[in-house]
Length: 230
Image 1 (cartoon, rainbow, N blue to C red):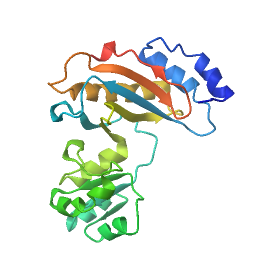
Image 2: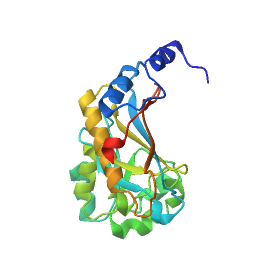
Image 3: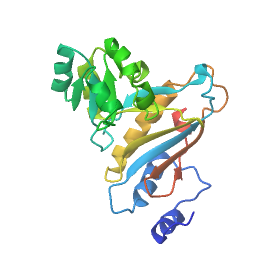
């Protein structure tokens, strides 16, 4: 893949063989985010687990202290007073069965996170085929299946993110924007890493963090030394 001059110049500042501590890695990633828009800074965390086994799954949610820098649109499936409660807490949309055809037939996806009360999971289940592949299916582990819709909505709006393994046992998560300060990015990243350490499955053997890379949307990756996190 051919890269432009800006990318090549940015990549020259990074030693591909070196593991940088968090502060240095964040500084380099910020420096190499040279696009004309406010790039997202992401962490790519390869774990020494096998997600094909249920006892080695790593999944959960964490509230980043400084948020992600992105406005998250929340849809809540609920009924009765819980609909009003969700909207009062800041949900962008809330409702029940009537939302199903809108999503299924009209292809309406103007939301980033779906929350559901447990009594609505039968209804939400009908949307499994469309929500599942987009990673939008509510999940108790991520705190998105709950009767406490106020807390769920407020946490998401405050910067709560979900993390989960992909098929190659890597977790991809945003930790902020290039416009964040180095301190904000480092705190967000450390909070995410702390959550993943806590989520380490008992069945995981050997080295837990295989590699951790920080990168901006258009910039080169910077490898992070994970010793302090374990």
